[in-house]
Image (cartoon, rainbow, N blue to C red; front, side, top):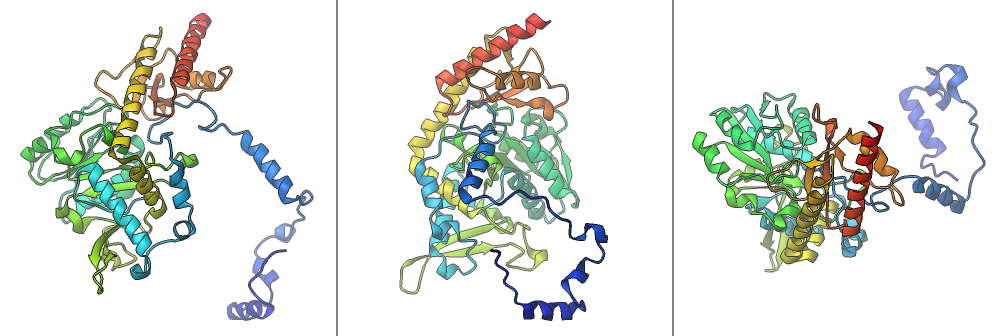
Length: 457
């Protein structure tokens, strides 16, 4: 049975309002032979049979939980404590959209406040918002914040070539209708420090990533000072992997003006591509240009702690031309997941996860670098990803890895998708979820593929 909310009288009134005599008249523009085709549908199935069919189809898919995976490039397989899904699955959180009536949304507002506090602790910054769709949109919002900070008078934005290429693409999409010049991303081999010579009085911001898209840990100490020596007002935005901050110095400590990134590693899982979370923090001096929401803590009329929407500079709340962004929804449920994740791990647990990522990646890199035909190209320190020069195109190697016995292996990211001439370079990601046995099996499979490639040649 299909539920139809409209009565015959409802339909009659609507048809009269638009001057149509019947529902059939609405389809007169469709050729008659195509208006009401007879559908050759199978017989109806019971719920049990439908679920069995869907499970069969699902089993045909290869997913990161069923096979060893070394694919990263911005989305990573990390351990998600059970309590994360338990909390975000509670009805008061899973069904709540957004706190338009702050006085009756104290639980949601407190969760956002705690999230903001944790992001500030993690990044070493003054204020954090809630929030953006993902790391790519957060990067674009950094450009818009810098552009607005200078009242649209500074038009140049320098982006390090080692920033995630998908983030750079989104920035260009966001700013294509604005008078903004995106520069600095011409060659992947250009180190961030080389951008400094291009900073001038027309530069709104410099954007770098650490660890960068290739997993390398950038030497950013002193970068802000060197940028400000060229121009004291130019902003420095740093994109970062939040897990790496359990081990690395937070960007706020070396002068970053904006810190942002993808929050997917913070308890969100892979989820077949989303939804994800763009975390974003800045200095208090720029709070008026901050997009999204800012929740604050106060005292109510009875002297009890309460939470309020301190800043809501979105176009839904204020005049469109006064809004800092057109972001219409914060990723509240994802922000809550990140809050629970960070709270459960604590600073010591986050450091332990970061160390596991670091050491397991270096264990894998050392083993792969020793294989005939392969070489690891990262010579500077790296976090949990590294680039491998392969003896044949990555696409062919990954196809062979999927045929590995006894278990298929999901290989690394084919950098040929983003960089011309890099079809033989693989970006390999290793997290705490990769056991030593999985890494050894991956190395053995790569060795076997190399032998096979040499035999065919």
